[in-house]
Image (cartoon, rainbow, N blue to C red; front, side, top):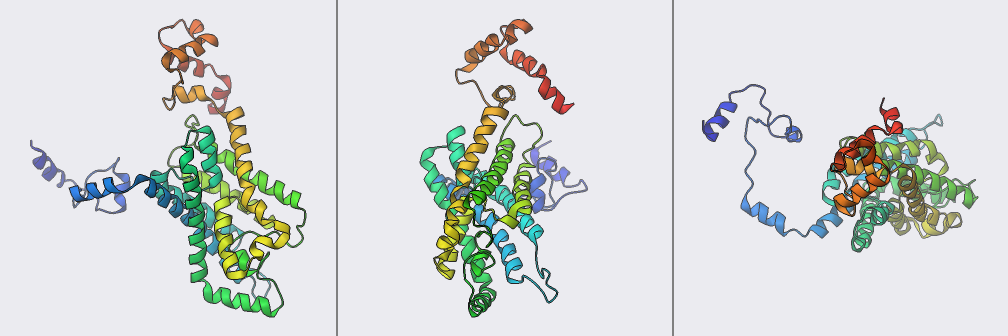
Length: 365
């Protein structure tokens, strides 16, 4: 039977799926009422012509935009409509803000990570360069793109909320208040500490440990040897790590991302004054910079304590730097080959060694 006859026969089956979101399940279902449009040579030529480096930078900016925009919009809703006549929140809550950031991160990874790798955080980019071999020459361009994505999200949010922000600004000035600081118009864009939080060391440690928590979760999700995380769950796992920290610590001021804070803080300075950078004893530098050493600490902890490179080699996701001979020498050194009696099959010895790892068996039993 020819291919055309087979295609015609397949159209007679029931349960055919129309074009649309069903493309996402092609690995399970491949039949359609209307066949997908053929890819033209012109489209292939165009896609080949596109500069990959530019696409990666645009994807990073777009991903940060997807993450920041819904989050600061939720903050604006909560801040502008802070209370009703009964003194309770009229619109939004910390719960809503946490979910906005969480789902925004998940959508950013799903949408843009296939193109750029989905860093969306300067600290993650730096750590990938240190630990995973990400090209250092790309690091400055990725970081600039991430900050620009946050800046664009801040501009668009201000534009969409401008009538409300203008009224909020006028009301604040009429009361003799500041346009920057906690609960101010600028706080819809970037983080400010509570008026009672004057201890910079306390603010530093809060930011450091929150960012470290997130960094360890991110690194565990990126570990190919981790059996508890599937590729499809990674966007939501990382998003929920951010959400968990927002729900727990947003009430005492956290930023969590250099690009997210710096990009929107620049927008706040444009519209509400330089106090966005100078108020609160220079807290902005804690919000902007602490994320980097905290994530370096988190990834260093994971690499030193939790990483199991042998499992990565066994899964076929990595190889010994010196090839098969290097792997055989390691297995011989630790006694795996001699115990198993299979000197000519290092891959089988590797699996044997992993099977005898009591800590791993205990975690999966």
